[in-house]
Image 1 (cartoon, rainbow, N blue to C red):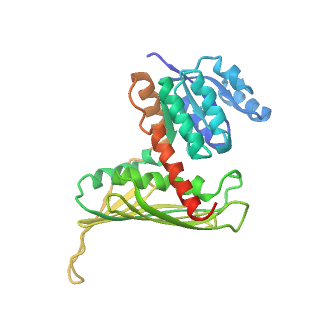
Image 2: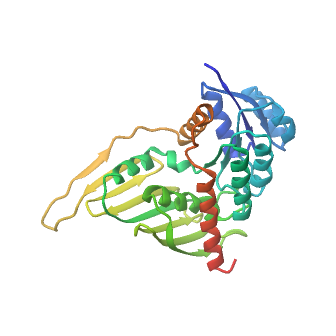
Image 3: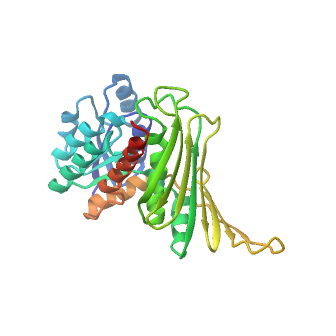
Length: 311
Protein backbone atom coordinates (compact mmCIF):
# COMPACT_ATOMS: atom_id res chain seq x y z
CA UNK A 1 0.00 0.00 0.00
CA UNK A 2 1.39 3.37 -1.06
CA UNK A 3 1.50 5.72 1.91
CA UNK A 4 0.56 9.39 1.75
CA UNK A 5 3.22 11.75 3.11
CA UNK A 6 1.61 14.02 5.70
CA UNK A 7 2.72 16.93 7.88
CA UNK A 8 1.23 18.82 10.82
CA UNK A 9 1.79 22.54 11.37
CA UNK A 10 1.05 23.68 14.93
CA UNK A 11 1.40 21.32 17.87
CA UNK A 12 -1.04 22.70 20.38
CA UNK A 13 -3.79 20.47 21.75
CA UNK A 14 -5.50 19.88 18.39
CA UNK A 15 -2.26 19.58 16.45
CA UNK A 16 -1.15 16.78 18.74
CA UNK A 17 -4.49 15.04 18.20
CA UNK A 18 -3.91 15.21 14.44
CA UNK A 19 -0.38 13.86 14.84
CA UNK A 20 -1.51 10.99 17.05
CA UNK A 21 -4.18 9.97 14.57
CA UNK A 22 -1.93 10.26 11.54
CA UNK A 23 0.61 8.05 13.30
CA UNK A 24 -2.11 5.41 13.71
CA UNK A 25 -3.56 5.58 10.18
CA UNK A 26 -1.96 2.87 8.04
CA UNK A 27 -1.98 4.87 4.82
CA UNK A 28 -0.26 7.92 6.39
CA UNK A 29 3.46 8.56 6.75
CA UNK A 30 4.40 11.58 8.89
CA UNK A 31 7.29 13.33 7.15
CA UNK A 32 7.40 16.36 9.39
CA UNK A 33 5.81 18.45 12.11
CA UNK A 34 6.32 22.13 12.86
CA UNK A 35 5.95 24.40 15.87
CA UNK A 36 7.69 27.51 17.18
CA UNK A 37 8.20 26.02 20.66
CA UNK A 38 11.40 24.00 20.94
CA UNK A 39 10.30 22.07 24.02
CA UNK A 40 7.15 20.92 22.27
CA UNK A 41 9.18 19.76 19.26
CA UNK A 42 11.55 17.80 21.49
CA UNK A 43 8.65 16.11 23.29
CA UNK A 44 6.94 15.17 20.01
CA UNK A 45 10.17 13.91 18.47
CA UNK A 46 10.77 11.68 21.49
CA UNK A 47 7.24 10.29 21.44
CA UNK A 48 6.64 9.85 17.70
CA UNK A 49 10.16 9.99 16.22
CA UNK A 50 8.78 12.42 13.66
CA UNK A 51 11.09 14.90 11.90
CA UNK A 52 10.60 18.31 13.59
CA UNK A 53 10.95 21.83 12.20
CA UNK A 54 10.56 25.38 13.45
CA UNK A 55 10.45 26.85 9.94
CA UNK A 56 7.52 26.30 7.61
CA UNK A 57 9.52 26.46 4.39
CA UNK A 58 11.90 23.76 5.63
CA UNK A 59 8.93 21.61 6.57
CA UNK A 60 7.31 22.04 3.16
CA UNK A 61 10.64 21.18 1.52
CA UNK A 62 9.97 17.62 2.76
CA UNK A 63 7.33 17.50 0.00
CA UNK A 64 4.31 16.36 2.06
CA UNK A 65 1.30 15.32 -0.01
CA UNK A 66 -1.22 16.49 2.62
CA UNK A 67 -0.92 19.00 5.47
CA UNK A 68 -2.95 19.72 8.61
CA UNK A 69 -2.89 23.38 9.68
CA UNK A 70 -3.52 23.53 13.43
CA UNK A 71 -2.01 26.89 14.38
CA UNK A 72 -3.97 29.57 16.30
CA UNK A 73 -6.77 31.15 14.26
CA UNK A 74 -4.96 34.46 13.75
CA UNK A 75 -2.18 32.55 11.94
CA UNK A 76 -4.43 30.43 9.72
CA UNK A 77 -4.21 32.79 6.75
CA UNK A 78 -0.44 33.12 6.48
CA UNK A 79 0.14 29.43 7.19
CA UNK A 80 -2.51 28.13 4.79
CA UNK A 81 -1.34 30.55 2.09
CA UNK A 82 2.21 29.18 2.31
CA UNK A 83 0.92 25.62 1.89
CA UNK A 84 -1.38 26.50 -1.02
CA UNK A 85 1.46 28.31 -2.80
CA UNK A 86 3.35 25.00 -2.77
CA UNK A 87 0.33 23.27 -4.35
CA UNK A 88 -0.15 20.93 -1.38
CA UNK A 89 -3.65 19.72 -0.31
CA UNK A 90 -4.49 20.97 3.18
CA UNK A 91 -6.94 20.64 6.03
CA UNK A 92 -7.30 23.86 8.05
CA UNK A 93 -8.79 23.56 11.52
CA UNK A 94 -11.93 25.63 11.97
CA UNK A 95 -12.51 28.46 11.60
CA UNK A 96 -10.98 28.72 8.14
CA UNK A 97 -9.47 32.14 8.90
CA UNK A 98 -9.72 35.04 11.33
CA UNK A 99 -11.82 37.10 8.90
CA UNK A 100 -14.09 36.46 5.94
CA UNK A 101 -11.79 38.55 3.72
CA UNK A 102 -8.88 36.25 4.55
CA UNK A 103 -11.09 33.19 4.06
CA UNK A 104 -12.22 34.39 0.64
CA UNK A 105 -8.63 34.93 -0.44
CA UNK A 106 -7.66 31.41 0.65
CA UNK A 107 -10.65 29.87 -1.14
CA UNK A 108 -9.92 31.78 -4.33
CA UNK A 109 -6.21 30.95 -4.21
CA UNK A 110 -6.90 27.25 -3.67
CA UNK A 111 -9.47 27.23 -6.48
CA UNK A 112 -7.14 29.00 -8.91
CA UNK A 113 -4.28 26.64 -8.14
CA UNK A 114 -6.47 23.52 -8.08
CA UNK A 115 -5.43 22.73 -4.49
CA UNK A 116 -7.89 20.72 -2.33
CA UNK A 117 -8.80 22.84 0.71
CA UNK A 118 -10.76 21.21 3.55
CA UNK A 119 -11.97 22.88 6.74
CA UNK A 120 -11.99 20.93 10.00
CA UNK A 121 -15.59 21.27 11.17
CA UNK A 122 -15.09 18.03 13.01
CA UNK A 123 -18.60 17.52 14.43
CA UNK A 124 -19.86 16.48 10.99
CA UNK A 125 -17.91 13.25 11.55
CA UNK A 126 -19.44 12.55 14.95
CA UNK A 127 -21.46 9.30 14.66
CA UNK A 128 -24.36 10.94 16.54
CA UNK A 129 -24.52 13.74 13.97
CA UNK A 130 -24.33 11.23 11.13
CA UNK A 131 -27.23 9.31 12.71
CA UNK A 132 -29.33 12.48 12.94
CA UNK A 133 -28.55 13.23 9.30
CA UNK A 134 -29.72 9.74 8.31
CA UNK A 135 -32.97 10.11 10.27
CA UNK A 136 -33.69 13.55 8.83
CA UNK A 137 -33.36 12.24 5.28
CA UNK A 138 -36.59 10.36 6.01
CA UNK A 139 -38.39 13.54 7.12
CA UNK A 140 -40.64 15.78 5.06
CA UNK A 141 -40.92 18.51 7.68
CA UNK A 142 -38.29 19.49 10.25
CA UNK A 143 -39.64 22.11 12.65
CA UNK A 144 -36.73 23.18 14.82
CA UNK A 145 -33.22 22.39 16.06
CA UNK A 146 -31.70 23.31 19.43
CA UNK A 147 -27.96 23.13 20.07
CA UNK A 148 -26.26 23.22 23.48
CA UNK A 149 -22.48 23.51 23.64
CA UNK A 150 -21.29 24.59 27.08
CA UNK A 151 -18.42 24.00 29.47
CA UNK A 152 -15.78 25.62 31.67
CA UNK A 153 -13.44 28.36 30.46
CA UNK A 154 -10.52 26.86 28.46
CA UNK A 155 -7.22 28.63 29.27
CA UNK A 156 -5.73 27.32 26.01
CA UNK A 157 -8.11 29.52 23.96
CA UNK A 158 -6.85 33.09 24.08
CA UNK A 159 -7.22 34.48 20.56
CA UNK A 160 -10.99 34.20 19.97
CA UNK A 161 -14.25 34.17 21.91
CA UNK A 162 -16.94 31.58 22.34
CA UNK A 163 -18.70 32.44 19.05
CA UNK A 164 -15.74 31.57 16.84
CA UNK A 165 -14.47 28.70 18.98
CA UNK A 166 -17.70 26.95 20.03
CA UNK A 167 -20.72 28.35 18.20
CA UNK A 168 -18.96 27.96 14.84
CA UNK A 169 -19.51 24.20 15.20
CA UNK A 170 -23.27 24.59 15.47
CA UNK A 171 -23.53 27.37 12.90
CA UNK A 172 -22.06 24.82 10.49
CA UNK A 173 -24.09 21.86 11.77
CA UNK A 174 -27.39 23.66 11.27
CA UNK A 175 -26.48 24.18 7.60
CA UNK A 176 -25.26 20.61 7.25
CA UNK A 177 -28.30 18.98 8.85
CA UNK A 178 -30.91 21.14 7.11
CA UNK A 179 -29.13 21.36 3.75
CA UNK A 180 -29.94 25.05 3.93
CA UNK A 181 -28.50 28.46 4.81
CA UNK A 182 -29.60 31.26 7.10
CA UNK A 183 -32.57 33.37 6.07
CA UNK A 184 -32.15 35.37 9.28
CA UNK A 185 -29.93 35.05 12.34
CA UNK A 186 -29.22 37.09 15.46
CA UNK A 187 -27.12 36.75 18.61
CA UNK A 188 -26.77 38.11 22.12
CA UNK A 189 -23.38 37.86 23.85
CA UNK A 190 -21.77 38.74 27.15
CA UNK A 191 -18.16 38.95 28.34
CA UNK A 192 -17.49 37.87 31.92
CA UNK A 193 -14.19 36.01 32.32
CA UNK A 194 -11.74 37.39 29.76
CA UNK A 195 -11.30 39.89 26.94
CA UNK A 196 -13.57 37.96 24.53
CA UNK A 197 -17.24 37.00 24.82
CA UNK A 198 -17.79 33.80 26.82
CA UNK A 199 -21.58 33.43 26.49
CA UNK A 200 -23.81 33.58 23.42
CA UNK A 201 -27.42 32.80 22.54
CA UNK A 202 -28.11 32.57 18.81
CA UNK A 203 -31.52 32.35 17.14
CA UNK A 204 -32.21 31.95 13.46
CA UNK A 205 -34.42 30.74 10.66
CA UNK A 206 -33.04 28.70 7.77
CA UNK A 207 -34.06 29.25 4.15
CA UNK A 208 -35.87 25.92 4.48
CA UNK A 209 -38.03 27.33 7.31
CA UNK A 210 -36.35 25.34 10.11
CA UNK A 211 -35.97 27.37 13.30
CA UNK A 212 -32.62 27.08 15.11
CA UNK A 213 -31.43 28.06 18.56
CA UNK A 214 -27.89 27.76 19.96
CA UNK A 215 -26.68 28.14 23.53
CA UNK A 216 -22.89 28.24 23.93
CA UNK A 217 -20.81 29.34 26.90
CA UNK A 218 -17.62 28.95 28.91
CA UNK A 219 -19.31 29.53 32.28
CA UNK A 220 -20.75 26.04 32.90
CA UNK A 221 -18.80 23.79 35.33
CA UNK A 222 -19.41 20.68 33.20
CA UNK A 223 -19.12 19.94 29.50
CA UNK A 224 -22.31 19.36 27.50
CA UNK A 225 -22.86 18.88 23.77
CA UNK A 226 -26.50 18.27 22.81
CA UNK A 227 -28.72 18.50 19.74
CA UNK A 228 -32.53 18.31 19.89
CA UNK A 229 -34.59 18.15 16.72
CA UNK A 230 -38.37 18.46 16.46
CA UNK A 231 -40.17 17.20 13.36
CA UNK A 232 -43.79 16.47 12.56
CA UNK A 233 -43.31 12.74 13.03
CA UNK A 234 -40.63 12.41 15.74
CA UNK A 235 -38.37 14.10 18.26
CA UNK A 236 -34.64 13.35 18.27
CA UNK A 237 -32.11 13.88 21.06
CA UNK A 238 -28.36 13.42 20.58
CA UNK A 239 -25.48 13.57 23.03
CA UNK A 240 -22.36 14.35 21.00
CA UNK A 241 -20.02 13.34 23.84
CA UNK A 242 -21.42 9.85 24.46
CA UNK A 243 -22.55 9.66 20.80
CA UNK A 244 -25.97 8.40 21.91
CA UNK A 245 -29.11 9.16 19.91
CA UNK A 246 -32.70 8.75 21.13
CA UNK A 247 -35.72 8.91 18.88
CA UNK A 248 -39.19 9.63 20.32
CA UNK A 249 -42.33 8.85 18.35
CA UNK A 250 -44.94 11.52 17.63
CA UNK A 251 -46.96 12.75 20.61
CA UNK A 252 -50.68 12.08 20.09
CA UNK A 253 -52.38 12.88 23.41
CA UNK A 254 -51.85 12.70 27.14
CA UNK A 255 -53.86 9.50 27.20
CA UNK A 256 -51.69 7.80 24.56
CA UNK A 257 -48.26 6.30 25.00
CA UNK A 258 -45.29 7.01 22.75
CA UNK A 259 -42.26 4.90 21.94
CA UNK A 260 -38.61 5.68 22.59
CA UNK A 261 -35.89 4.14 20.46
CA UNK A 262 -32.27 4.36 21.53
CA UNK A 263 -29.95 3.82 18.58
CA UNK A 264 -26.95 1.58 19.27
CA UNK A 265 -23.69 3.42 19.90
CA UNK A 266 -20.77 2.58 17.63
CA UNK A 267 -18.22 4.89 19.24
CA UNK A 268 -15.70 6.42 16.86
CA UNK A 269 -13.19 9.21 17.24
CA UNK A 270 -14.37 11.98 14.87
CA UNK A 271 -10.83 13.23 14.18
CA UNK A 272 -9.79 9.80 12.93
CA UNK A 273 -12.74 9.71 10.54
CA UNK A 274 -12.09 13.29 9.43
CA UNK A 275 -8.43 12.65 8.59
CA UNK A 276 -9.14 9.28 6.97
CA UNK A 277 -11.68 10.87 4.63
CA UNK A 278 -9.37 13.82 3.95
CA UNK A 279 -6.57 11.47 2.90
CA UNK A 280 -8.96 9.36 0.83
CA UNK A 281 -10.08 12.44 -1.09
CA UNK A 282 -6.46 13.49 -1.66
CA UNK A 283 -5.50 10.01 -2.82
CA UNK A 284 -8.50 9.53 -5.12
CA UNK A 285 -8.68 13.09 -6.42
CA UNK A 286 -12.24 13.31 -5.07
CA UNK A 287 -13.88 16.43 -3.57
CA UNK A 288 -13.02 16.96 0.10
CA UNK A 289 -15.94 16.35 2.50
CA UNK A 290 -16.00 19.93 3.86
CA UNK A 291 -14.99 22.56 1.35
CA UNK A 292 -13.30 25.91 1.79
CA UNK A 293 -16.60 27.47 0.71
CA UNK A 294 -18.36 25.70 3.60
CA UNK A 295 -15.85 27.10 6.06
CA UNK A 296 -16.03 30.56 4.52
CA UNK A 297 -19.82 30.68 4.92
CA UNK A 298 -19.44 30.05 8.65
CA UNK A 299 -17.08 33.03 9.00
CA UNK A 300 -19.38 35.20 6.89
CA UNK A 301 -22.27 34.26 9.17
CA UNK A 302 -20.25 35.12 12.28
CA UNK A 303 -19.32 38.50 10.79
CA UNK A 304 -23.00 39.01 10.01
CA UNK A 305 -23.66 38.57 13.74
CA UNK A 306 -20.74 40.87 14.59
CA UNK A 307 -22.20 43.61 12.39
CA UNK A 308 -25.54 43.40 14.18
CA UNK A 309 -23.74 44.08 17.46
CA UNK A 310 -21.68 46.92 16.06
CA UNK A 311 -18.37 45.05 16.21
